[in-house]
Every structure is written in structure tokens, then in C-alpha cells.
Image (tube, rainbow, N blue to C red; front, side, top):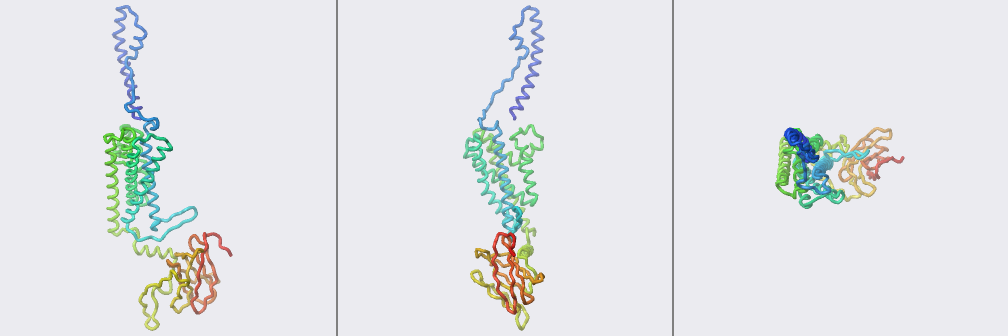
Length: 421
């Protein structure tokens, strides 16, 4: 593009200069011809009509598979996009795994219980995963260029190392942006890494031909720094003064500044009372996911027969290997048991609902982490017990409740679908 622009300007300038020189020569040659009475040869007339000719030659010829000098720009663009999109996937996956973001796959919506974790720990985890993912995206990009597109790739080893480091820097910066602005991180990242980066990179248009704001952005935009290094490796024999040294310095500086800024802001928010979720919110979220309602007595406490004061809390018995959970000690009749799937594994976070035969709800509770449950029965007689859980078919059974507590284990089959009647 730069060569084409210079050649266009040169041709226009040459044509103007040649026309003026031809007019000056004609003014001197014509009187001399009349004086000598000699005809001017045709070749001299052609030379006098266009005395200046512009000849162009390639200073540093490119290979046949260099995309007319645009291969460095496209490699830089793909590396930047791959690292940015990878950072977005990592951020969403980590937030979902920690319970701070839901996921929707097709018609299924799912979410997890939130984990008590600080913003600083979350940012460190995301940054580390982005750094691990960067060599994968950079390697896939360069292998595709070399073996699928047959692009000229001199100094392939150095190009791979530079691409991996550039991808890590972009991934770290993207995680910092997402951490700083939250939900708007994808939009801000798209503007910073793509919309403003392409015209300010100098890869497709010379910076001298773009507006001054883009020339200002070129001083720190990541894609410009990446393109300088890739172009030096591909076209200028990996020379440092061709842009490679500047590329290394700006990559290291951008990675350090991005990581430091993200950690400082995350630390300030963690110690300034701006946690992602407080302990009360996490407790409420756990209660919501277990679908609990107010119970007759708090879990882990019993009443003395004489004093009426709550007994001290004792450690819960280990019932992982028990075939049947022990009956509760309360005098009121209860339904208790354990919920398992068809493979014999316990199902946590299942919802247990006790209904009367006329359809009124008698109680509702969520299973514990070991799949056990205990639910009060305010009345004796036959009741309908309904058990539901994500990715499993509902279970319904008639339970006869008498004066004593009754054990009823539940086996849920999956996946969810129609319930046989």
C-alpha cells in the first residue's frame, strides 16, 4: 500500500515536471531549428515531448506467498483476536465454575452454588488459564498459516516464541479489562483490541495516511506493537531496528502494566468492602439452590425435655457409607432418607416436597451434600412425596406416615423428560 501511494505521487509529479521541461526545451529548440533549417528526427521529438521517465524497482522483494506484504497484518490480527476471544471464554468458564454466572446450553439453563473467593484470587486464576491457553491459540494460528495456507514463514521458531508472548500479553490485558468494567468488558475489549486496533496498526494502511487520532493510538495499541515485530521477522530478517526490539519492549510493558493494574484494583475492591458476594449473600444463594423453606427447628439443634433450651450443636454423623440414614431424634414424625441416581451415586441439591393427597404442600426441603434429607410431617396418614433434581426425572411416591418417623430412599433416573404415570 505504501509503495502504491508513493508510486502514484511520483507518477503525477514526474508528469508535471516532464511537461514543464518539455515546454522549456521546445522554446529553445524551435528557433534553433529554423536557423539551421534541419528537421528534428522522430526519436528526438519523442524524447523532447517526454524528457523525464520514472523507473521503479523493489528495494526488498517479498516472497511469492507473503500476501503482497499483508501476511504480517493478518497474522497479527488473528493472534490478537484469538487471545482476546480465548480470554473471554476463560473468564465466562471460571465465573460459571465459581457460581457467579449462569450458563445456557440450548434449552437447558444451569447454575452452580457460589464459592467464597476474592476478586484477586479470581483474577489470578483467569490470568493463569489465559497464559496456558495462549500457546495453544498461537500454535494453531502459525501451523495453519505454514502448512495450510503455505505462507512464507522465515525464522519460524522466533516467530512462534514472539506470537506466544504477544498472545499472553493480550490475554492478560483482556482479563484486566473484564475485571475492571465487569459485564461491559466484552464491548470495551472489542473496541480496544479490534475496532480501534485495525486502523491504528499500520498493517494495512501507512500511519501517515490515517487521521491523527489513530496515529496517537498507535503508540500503545497492542496490535500495532505485535504487527511491528511480526513484520520484522517475516520481511526484514528479524532485525531489531526494523521493529522487533520495539515489539518485545511494548509486549513486556503491556503485560506488566495490565497485570499490575488489575491486581491493584482487585485488591482495593477486596479490602474496601466491595466483594463480589458477601458471606450473607452466599448463604442465601445456598439456601435458594437447596429450595429450603422455614423448618420447625433449626438444623443441628434439639430441645431438652425439661429445660426447653437448645442443646449444644454436635458434629453430624458420617453417613456416606451407611445404607440407611439414622432416624431423627425428634418426637414429631418425619420422613427421612437419601436420594441417589440409577448408578447408586448420591444426588445433592435435590428438592423434596411433601404434599397431601388433596394437593396442599406440607413441607419442602433440599438434600444435603451426602444426598440425605429430613422433612417434618405435620399430619399422619398417606402423603405424596415428590423429589426433583436437575438432569433427572421427577420421582413421586405415596408414603404412609404414622406415629413414628418413616424412612424412604429415592432413586432418580435421568435425563429429565416425561414422567410416567
